Length: 241
Ligand SMILES: [Zn+2]
Image (cartoon, rainbow, N blue to C red):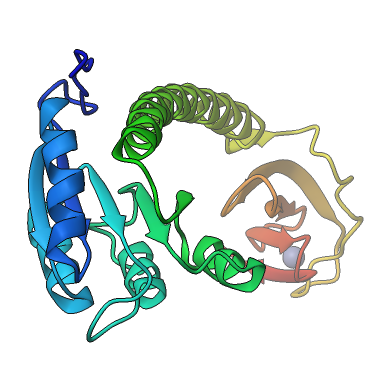
């Protein structure tokens, strides 16, 4: 037997392969060959057992037949793809169902590779090697993308925070409440509501809840000594203060 380059999973540990086939001879044939490439072998002879082992053991690769007792290989693939614990595990389907419709069904169910029986263990190993490398590099790439996105998010958060701070500063400047004798709205000419004498303009107060809703209050005094009055531009009401 020629030397076989050992397989390595993403974490550089020995990869665990779950072999699913109802035929023990087929499992043995593949198991013996894969063990030579440093694989650790798990086996299941039906679909349900395979699903349970896949979820609890999270193998690095799953090799399955389509014809399985209890649950078909198609259903097994679909269920493995639906479960968060097993979604990313590469699946190789080795099948004697090589008519086009079945092959399409296998892809649709979520398999990563389809091999036709009889399949030499060497071909299976080559497929597994390629999938493990692929999934390792995909996982690395996904990790790098996540890091990059996280960095960009942090950066845009900082930018947003900065622009908010600048905006707050601008708003508070615009909206500084103050007294003025040169208000934005020219104060009206008014008469004293008590004695009908003209009111003399004194000053205005610029206020309100925020810069978008400013208020201007004009203060007057009666030239005849009735007191001070406040005129609100918004309500156009005059009252004694
Ligand atoms: Zn008056």
